[in-house]
Image (tube, rainbow, N blue to C red; front, side, top):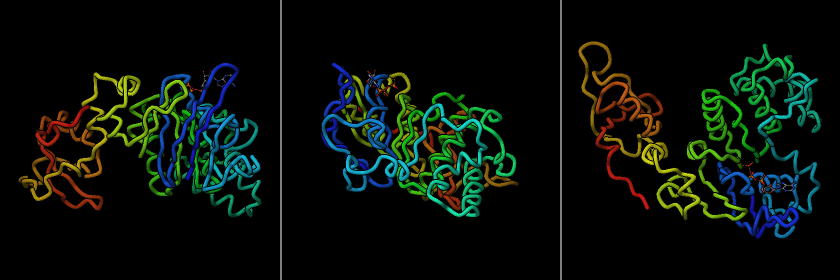
Length: 321
Ligand SMILES: Nc1ncnc2c1ncn2[C@@H]1O[C@H](COP(=O)(O)OP(=O)(O)OP(=O)(O)O)[C@@H](O)[C@H]1O
């Protein structure tokens, strides 16, 4: 758990963070979003003491971090930034092993952990463990940055616009990997972005900052349907609000569970490939448009038939403030 309590930071006459209070619960994927210069990075850097607040306290797992040694605190949390900051003359393996080595892990354990993390992040361990950062693509370097941050199994992961410099496809892949890692490990994540689609895709809760102030905190659905003011409305955008709305709900929530998909004559059923119940409604809509179909069969996490989703189920008037 990370608790910000009345936190303020000034740079000269400019108040970068202004009396911010909120709590990130253990296991949450918390996204900090806001316009450029709104104080997101400053707030994040207060968690690992790269910046100290002028006023207020930050508590990590109940402890006031001002009383902890910065090095010890930082070893307890992973930190990923946009431009990764890998050591250029160290191999991928040595980069990932930075914190485990500092903590004195035995060599075999470090080696196993490197293999595990490279595999988790879709990099061939044998091919890449001995490579140097300049031999990797931008997306691969970012994957190594995430692996390094996760190496010592931190309970907290701080990420500052980690995927902003990547092309949309690599970025989407890394977002999906991050979501899976978060689900599997239950790590508390604090993730800075200025991209609302990224925030909606990843966050369990979002905190919106504007000129140093916390203007709203809530689930992605809260932010979309009950924006606290003009800044939040602008960040959400008006044009594709409907698509964003579909992106934050899953097929499972609107599924006609009792309905059986009609069987086709030969292979499978006549409605085509099923979509997983965990897919977003936005993905279901995209599938319907691509297939020219007004309904899709749905399967559960084990691949068993779960029902059918109809186009009409997507059109049920959503709430909007
Ligand atoms: N070391 C510093 N010295 C002076 N001003 C600073 C310093 N760091 C940040 N600021 C100012 O504080 C404000 C908040 O900066 P911060 O980097 O936290 O914003 P941000 O929301 O992360 O922005 P961006 O999305 O552009 O990265 C900005 O106006 C910035 O210019």
